[in-house]
Image 1 (cartoon, rainbow, N blue to C red):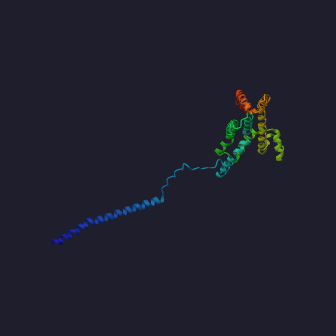
Image 2: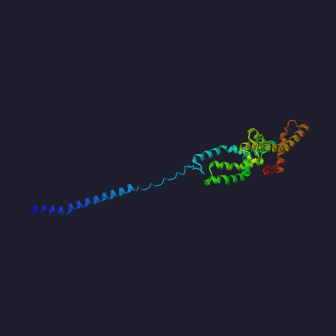
Image 3: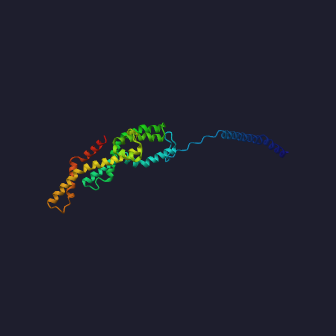
Length: 274
């Protein structure tokens, strides 16, 4: 009797506590699965945006300048970098300045002083000083409109060539221009502005070479007189074993320093371009 009563009590407790707990747990699990399905559907409908990729500090980007494409911009830049040495020699006063400085070194009887690097550096600095107004004009009329997108790269090159052409026309000789007009078989121009850059550039470098040799020859004459006087005196007194250059070189350097030769030479060269 007692055993059957305990059995019925256990069954009643099971119905009262265990089965409702299972039902509640099942309902809670179904609710969680429904929420998860709803969240998954929402995420698939509106995917979250990916975070932006961090910029690489070593990355180099070349964008098209002005109205031109990136490829044409690269072509123009590489072409300009390749032509820089030729432009420096043929369209600036660099050649005239360097020739005069080499003549001065030979006239003083010095072989390596000043060095070639020093003379080239001095010529570059003076060339930049002379060409700065031309460079400022090119920047205003060509580079700025290209950066703002008003003109293309080819139009910028055409605009940039105009100030350089005007500079070369100011110092070119008419005889040299006539020579290259004849050689190029071009029609005779009505005014200097009708000349093409094909004619002006070689005529300008030829005029600069002539002017450089002319200034160098005039610069050579005073030092040549000193060499001749020293050679005559040393020969007349019987100093045949002593080379005249050993005496004339210090005398030429003393004369050049006493008259402040560098100041006179640089001043004369700069005024020749005015």
